[in-house]
Amino acid sequence: MTSAESDYLSHLASLSLSFVGFSALVVTLRGALGGELSDRHLRLVRLYIEGGLSVTALALVPTLLNLLHMPDAVMWRLSSAAAASTLTVLLLIQFSRRRAIEPGRFPLWLVIVYAVSTVAVASLWFNAAGIPFSPNVGPYAIVLTWALCIFGFTFVRTIELFLHREG
Image (cartoon, rainbow, N blue to C red; front, side, top):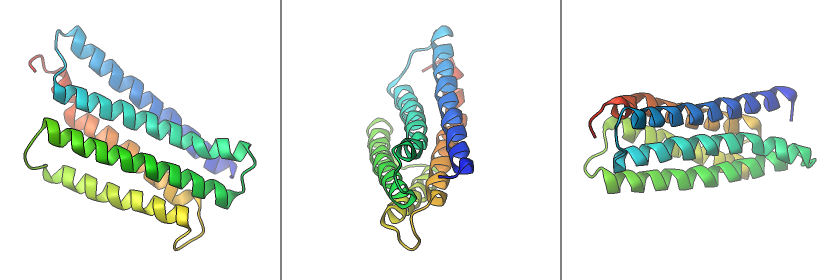
């Protein structure tokens, strides 16, 4: 792993952890304003925290494997498989939670997010398999960055829900 790759993933982990902390502060602010957390609020809080902490941990996996002197090809295969597994489960859980709490049609923006996220996770599976290129940092870094951006985008789209005094 090059120092640029390590630096990027380390910075991504730091940014992701900062996102988790900031979103937790917004939830605390809601409580301070006298608001209660509905099932929808709890679903979103779990999305922010689980998603942000997942990106943080996954961004550190290659560095851990590098410390164990794992060859690059093996390191990116294992890291990509771990990220693909984690993000696949996270996508399925979030889909299920949203369906249970907010029945009805998904808004178009969310359908697009799920579609692009599915393609992104598939690219991690391909990277783990070495198809069509040797496993490398590119798809891994792009997908983790995409995931953090989506969690942030969702946070921005829903922040009013947390700051509004009524449920």
